[in-house]
Amino acid sequence: MTARKIIIDTDPGQDDAVALLLAMASPELDILGITVVAGNVPLALTEVNTRKVCELAGRSDIPVYAGCDAPLERPLVTAEHVHGKTGLDGADLPEPTMRLQDRHAVDFIIDTIRNSDPGQITLCPLGPLTNIAEALTRAPDITAKIAEIVLMGGGYFEQGNITPSAEFNIYVDPEAAKIVFGAGVKLTVIPLDCTHKALTNPARVKAFRVLGTPVGDAVAGLTDFFERFDKEKYGSVGAPLHDPCVIAYLLQPDLFQGRFINVEIETASQLTLGSTVADWWRVSGRKPNATFIRDIDDEGFFTLLTERLGRL
Ligand code: RIB
Ligand code: CA
Image 1 (cartoon, protein in one colour):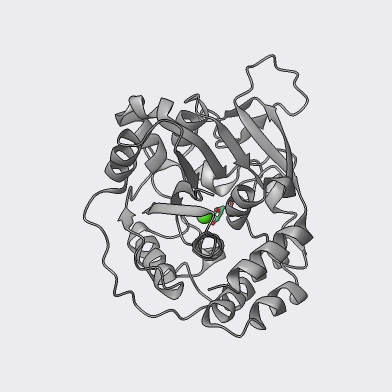
Image 2 (cartoon, rainbow, N blue to C red):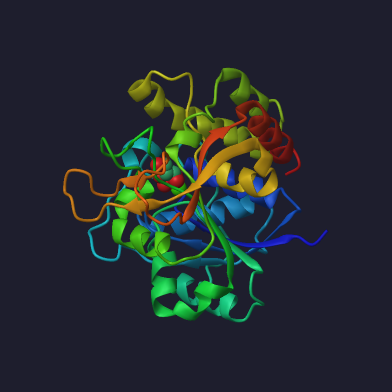
């Protein structure tokens, strides 16, 4: 079986870190490179965090590229209140020794897709869509060559998490999201409607810890820290593991259910900026442009995640 070629775009963030580990533990995926964007914390931290996680997994062979340090048209909004000052609070990972690539992340995305056969590469954005939008704008020719974009972002029934109506990744750079959602690339969206059903709980965090490995301990520590915000805000039992759902979708899509519908991004209204207007009931007459995932088999998801983390 040929491994699926992917580029992960990320803003670690505890849940990004777990997504990266899941991907690095899965031989079905060939990670051509990891591109980093500003989001949960500034770029100077998200790029270091990415390299820390690669080294934790013993995967310093994967090239890491720093990308955009701010949204296309707006000042950066970060989420230290969720992820802590470092962006990876909860696990004390050593400073990385692997080097950061010199090339800009957007150049890596453009060159890699340009030099690939059509339909070979899947983009997996886990943060604000600035790098992806920049690549599609600078090199519209690559649009036709991208196999699929599978991203974490948005929310419809769940509405928002950074504002009442917008999810963080979309809210930080709504203009970038509008470009990506309007590019005509095969698009699968993993929104809060799905990820809010992928909640940690004490038994699931214990399953990470009993792996008895540095990866298991780190993931238990990261999720312990990450969950305090959501437990307080939503009164939930644990934290939603947003970004690992993207990787799990690549590995086991039958764990997920959704609909091919029209999804548009609000970029004009101050009140609802960054909301994903998902035409779930197909009333708008607008052309469908995304598979919008609403449900997940959370037991199956955590079984997959824990088994794979145990391989590192
Ligand atoms: O809203 C959740 C998303 O925003 C996740 O990707 C999290 O890492 C943050 O980037
Ligand atoms: Ca993220």
